[in-house]
Amino acid sequence: MSNNLVTATCPNCNSPLQIKEGQDFVKCEYCGTISSAPKAIEYHQHQSTSYNFSGANPVVNFSNGQDLETLVKNADMHLKLKNYADAQSIYEKISKEYPHDYRGWWG
Image (cartoon, rainbow, N blue to C red; front, top):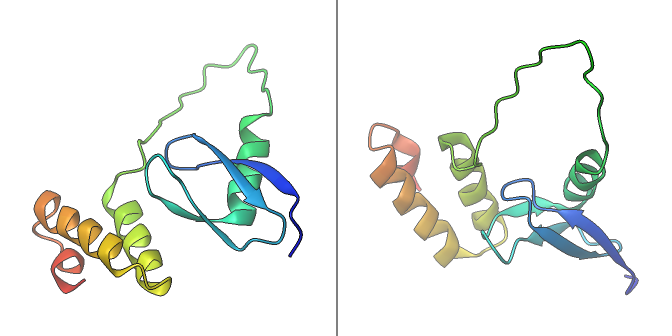
């Protein structure tokens, strides 16, 4: 693996990430989200692109990334990476914020 660093952006909180070239996954030091390195790089490139919506009235909805599905994906990724303590804390958050969803309790 090379030591070259690539600039990326956390898709969850928009914090800057530094990824080693060839790295598969990256954990955001700010929010703890684990992302695919190529997706974080692609997200950064998308964020750096400017768009012109002249004459249009677009509606854009933003999420803080802490919806149920994002939490479940993050917890599952922590399990795959054997970060059991991080996975447990996310599953506990899911069971408190979404008590009706079995995945928080099952995790």
